[in-house]
Amino acid sequence: MAIRKVLVYPDKRLREKAQPVERIDDSVRRLLDDLAETMYAEPGVGLAAPQLGVSLRVFVIDLKSPEGGELLEFVNPRFLSREGEITWKEGCLSFPGISEEITRHGRVSVEALDRNGKTFTIDGEELLAVAMQHEYDHLDGRLLIDHVSFLKKRMIRREMAKLAVERGATTDAEAG
Ligand SMILES: [Zn+2]
Image 1 (cartoon, protein in one colour):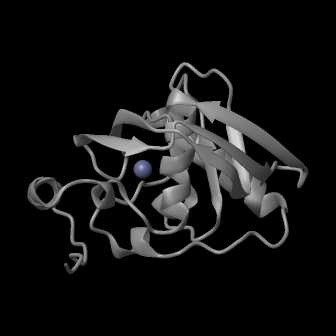
Image 2: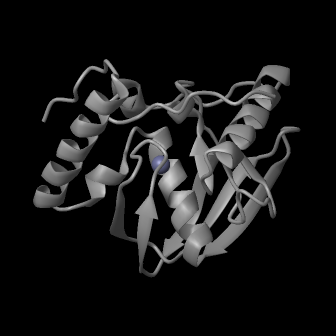
């Protein structure tokens, strides 16, 4: 297990559409371990593989992070149903210091593979529903900033640019 570096917006790798996992082997299980360890270290309640620069459809969630409650691992997830509506103040490890109210579905059902390649389904409400939709977004290169108003987008871009200077980061700025 290893704590890996979380990519920060506007790193363009966050915009890639992730590929399905074709075979669940030790490298995928190691990725799940690293995702969990990095999520607990940051801490965050969820982390998706693209945030570590790995373009695979994999994410982890633990609503009780960092103490650790139930670790949920998802490989090749898909939505079986999405209903209702909920507004939640969300953060994202790829947008340090930013939190925005975002409206999503309030109840979702997700089917995915576990670390042994076995199919499972999980129903979620409230924070679990929000987290599953947030992490799933990462697999399609969709980010928190895509859910907010034009003015908020500008504000977030400005904050993130400031942060990049502070961190001395050299990232390719996202166009548009
Ligand atoms: Zn995120």
